[in-house]
Length: 216
Length: 216
DNA sequence: GTCTATATACAGATAGAC
DNA sequence: GTCTATCTGTATATAGAC
Image (cartoon, rainbow over all chains, first blue to last red; front, side):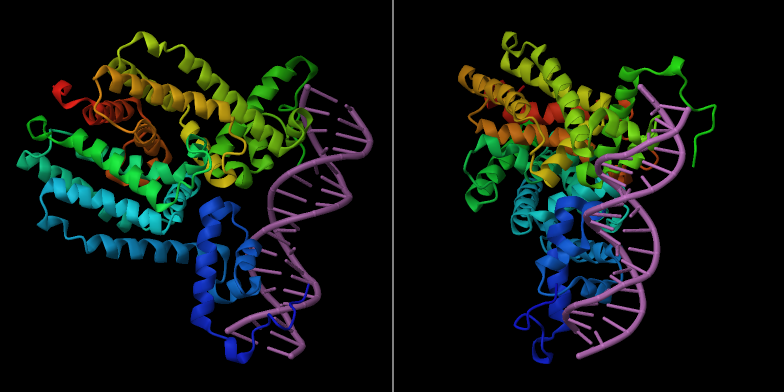
């Protein structure tokens, strides 16, 4: 069905950067629900102000669009993490910072955890920029090992523990629809809920890794 | 392309229960990769000894097949949990049992975590038997509260903590393809790896919830 | 740059032979 | 109960007008 003239873009309202961005935003939401395989270009277009043809004009294919979404999402992420300057903090402080940062990021972009999970499950992480994963986890692992050496943390296997830490955070966002029944009528993404979840996770994780003589 | 006669089922090798089970097994694997939306009936059929038409003969539609897979998977799960008799254990013992049981289940059926995550992300948990979620989490929440009352556990918010506990476990299985780079050449699903992950998680969680005067 | 219209391919589901 | 063949809708991607 043709667009009504009122919605058609005139020369004056055309803006390639804005359109590209609109498409990326809409695509992120769509990919966060179904992943690459189940996402529909038609559905992405419907979320934007432009038609499906524009997706192919700017991104050539659904797959390339997916790549672009991943790129943008995790590049941003990486930049933020680098600004944390974890090395200048004590290991416990750094750990609290990392946890708090994870929840803040996910709160700002609730799609992130789902996209990551879907990409891992559906595509074995093929489209996930490996650098990103490595840097993010390496930061956490390094921090844990620094804490063991300093005596702040108990002896622990840093890689397994890093997974447990990230997992307790990510799961809340991944499974939130299956967890909804625990808080009927509450929005699990509202700042208050996320704040409570974040605080509770921080307490559990800190208590879980601190050396016993430091635990109080 | 027609089947070669050697693979065609003769009257003697026909078995409706076996065929149904084969389809369910294959479907579970397929659904665990793409979820309901991205799963292909053709692909499910290819994993079995029979053709796509059999899926419709036994299950009528892709959606009903999906329902049947969920049903079978989580009914089994529920039966197992009921056999744990958590009430007869001290809260710390019960918690260790629950964690160990989670890893055992996921180890036996590595698809479970992915199916749950995909169902939550793609379908908002619409097809997930709500009873199951409630019973499983209620068991864990009840156990945590019992532990707070007995003084074994520190004061904590049981629902948020339950999510953190389940999350740290589930994430390993959900994101394993994105975590592979941490152990190059290792199979993250081999019993030794899962055993290590399970032990590390148990240590962290126990230390994370025990009251400080009980922590050693 | 943006649109409509359409080619092409694929996937869910059914009909009917064996 | 199992198969082949096919109908029908839908999805990716392109052609070409504006």
